[in-house]
Each structure stands twice: as structure tokens, then as C-alpha cells.
Length: 148
Image 1 (cartoon, rainbow, N blue to C red):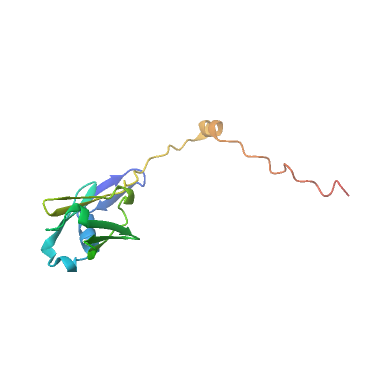
Image 2 (image 1 turned 90 degrees about the horizontal axis):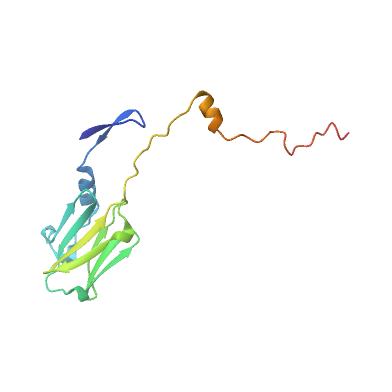
């Protein structure tokens, strides 16, 4: 766990840099048609995660990777090979895959995390000069007593 001070919220936040790796490993399902767990590996970096899958005997033309809802489905020669559940913080449009020497690499880029920014608070005359003027409350309202 790492702690860092956030001046915007004026508090100390705790951050576990390995939490995303642990969560990704929990969310990734086993690939039963590919055999044992050693047939694929998950690597989590700062900006992306990579799933490395052994696919010996398959050419890139024989493999298809499909995004269906919140899953990636791997199909080879028309047969289902496995399914991966996509984490919520993956940039869907940036997902890519490549095959080299019998090993497929699926790259899952993470969505950029929002960085808090501090908004200056003005006081006194400076705030009055920059604040937009509010419309008059009586504007557009007819006086019922004057029409009687």
C-alpha cells in the first residue's frame, strides 16, 4: 500500500499498485479448451494489460477474437477456445491482438484515470466582479393587484 496526499480533498488516500493486477487475474477466466492454466499468462503494466496465450498450430488467419458485451471470445478454426471477462477500466476501442511464433498477445489499454484539479475560490470584491449577475426575480411577473 502506498499513501499520497490529495490537496483537492485535503486528505490522504491509500493506493495499492498491485490491486489492478490482482483484480484482472480474478476477472480473467480459465481457458478450458486450451488446457491447463500454464497455457496463458497475464501481464499488467502501468498503462495496459497483456494476455499471452499459447496457440500452437494456428495461423493468424485461423484465429478470431470477438468482443461480445463485456467479454473477449477467442475462436480458432471455428472452434471456441476461450473467454476472457473484460475489466471495466479497459479502453474498448484500443484493444489489439497479434500472433507470433504460436503465441497470441492481446493488449488491453487502460482508460486514463481523471486527475483532480483545484478550482480557486475567490473572496470579497474579486468574486463580485467575476460573478455573473442573476436575473431579477420580478422580471416577467405581472402584479395581480394592479390589474384589479
